[in-house]
Image (cartoon, rainbow, N blue to C red; front, side, top):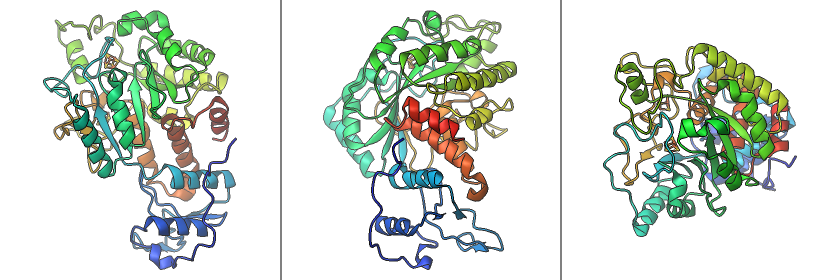
Length: 429
Ligand code: SF4
Ligand code: SF4
């Protein structure tokens, strides 16, 4: 297994006075120097999902939070050299992550039952930006705003490859959520998350086309690619079979859970549930929504799949336990049923841009049509779990913190995952 640390620590760095690190953000140079002072047993991370602010090791009080007689929440002693390597890797090479989300095209070449995109007011009636110069200056401005991680969806982003290439020129890292039917140039070094919805025999019914063979052909031997299996009521029993199938392809697999849109729920509830290409067969008796017993079965089968196909699966037991909570994953505002503790809500630097490059300021998140009540979207949930973990004192929560960050790095940094690496990470939990 390669070392997590690519860059050597600075040699001969001057000592930073301890008090200089308290209560303010260090410069990048100071941060590197402080890191250089960290010996094998100490590290000073203050982590807030993408931002690390150094703090000092205080065992009898935290001057940042001005709390006395308690160990500082963000300072701890770490004697595990592998954990320490990973913490340093996150600190030096992964963070800070400043993300925003971009819908890149209206087009899609398949028709998924319950599609989250072609409903609601977020996508319609907006002309798609196509002018190269406009797109170029938009993403240049985004990079200047500080965005260094792009989350890309659509429609189907692979149908707008030229825009992806322009985006990738300005924003160095990112993730593309794709149905995998069209290859994306390997020059674009973003993580490629290829959605699958079940066994190939179900593609036609669930997604309107048979696509599995194309997905494998396009992304076999591509170190950017991860299959994402969206588990639904109709496919929960296929978890082992789908995992075995993906293991055979050599493309690693992770799991998502079907999260219905409010439109899907409304149509199920309506006696005459209006039909269209994205609501073909669902009914109260036959739909995709996971029941409490499905969630239990999903958790059990994923655990078995991780055990049987440990080299092929990128997942972990902690996240599995959190996401399968039958009570739901998010805390909702009772008046609006909108999640109040979701890390993917639009705020601060995290913005959602539509296909005309306008910033959405009237919606809750980048998947605004999904019902928070049923939301178990894997990426948003993982980000939220990581954010929640920052509230747990590092001394007691270190293993969980590392487990969640390792999962994120494996899924969302291309080239991080490999069958060998994933297996060793899971064994380490
Ligand atoms: S791949 Fe499916 S879910 Fe995604 S935009 Fe196309 S139809 Fe909708
Ligand atoms: S990501 Fe899910 S839980 Fe969060 S705001 Fe959007 S729909 Fe709600």
